Image (cartoon, helix red, strand yellow):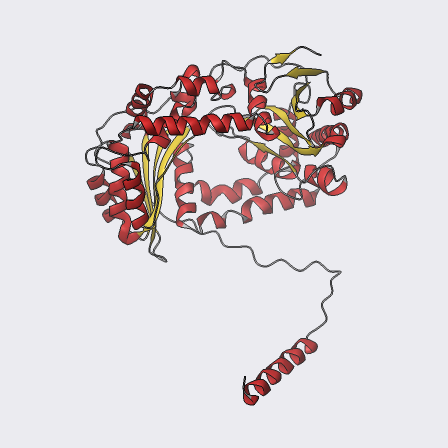
Length: 483
């Protein structure tokens, strides 16, 4: 560095120090004032129907040369899998990347890499998707590959066996993970083995799946009559429709939307602690709750506000108590799993083993509190509403986010102006609304309290709380006799 450069740097540093010294000193005892809330700008979209019967939604966003593309299928594993073939939907989705009539799996992967993208196929309980994000210039070429995967899958036996082996390893590994065990046992306890929500893939069901099962599932499920195609990004609506019609021209019409008729829920049992033994566990995983309402409940907005207060954000009651004040956990929360059916309400998290009994006492304290023993304050209500409405603008900040928003409107049957009206619906919720829905949907007398942990350490203290009797189950949720 020359003498001139050194002198210049010294002068700049001196000016910066002088500027900082001239500013008012920072008062760290005061909370900074929040900035202005983000403005909600809901993008427009067009709707139409393709020649094969699939719905099409297109939203233009021209700030970047990107496009998010998805095909969403209404209905999922809970509608299209039989109990003895649980896991066939996910295996079929994975097999679409294993090769087509003209490309093997490696050729597919290489072709997509050259385009700078990938095609992801997923299968959930009530829907499935094929999706990718590409530059607008590569949309047509990527769409051609997706169409090849969708319409001409080869389902090579070697690929099936490799994916089956991977899935079996995952299922075996899950037996050692308390979170995975709780996620399996909790719905089984709530819904029973006869209800789709209580069923899950097992080693036996995955081993039983044949290539013929994969072919049959593909032919029955991936049909345009239950599909929505969404295109979001740097493309015009007419051009997007023409491109999709071209690429999917050979996709034959057919397929019906499922009715989403679920069997009746089993009779609720008195609150019980279902204890799953995981010897030596350093933490206990809690899942506490009961079946909740479907997404179309008129109480949806009140439930949103109530849950944010209870356990839906970092500063919620549950987390402030059990994590911040007591230090029993790195984080606890609560949620409602909304969908077409009665998804569960769940409160829980991972708890230090030695504090399992004390944490359960605090969980129950907060559940009773949200039902009235600890009245909701004006500040809590305002904070919860702000949290819900101020996060909404970020939903539309990317092409992928917009795509997800459009898909949600379609899959859940929401009105076209759902996002525009969301803030007004949240603003209308009162403390009485929150109290009413808490009492209606959190059944304190019939809670399933699933705890996965070291039985030798926690059973005695849990029993001593007197909160509920203890029933032992295995890692699948089946009753176990005491030992």
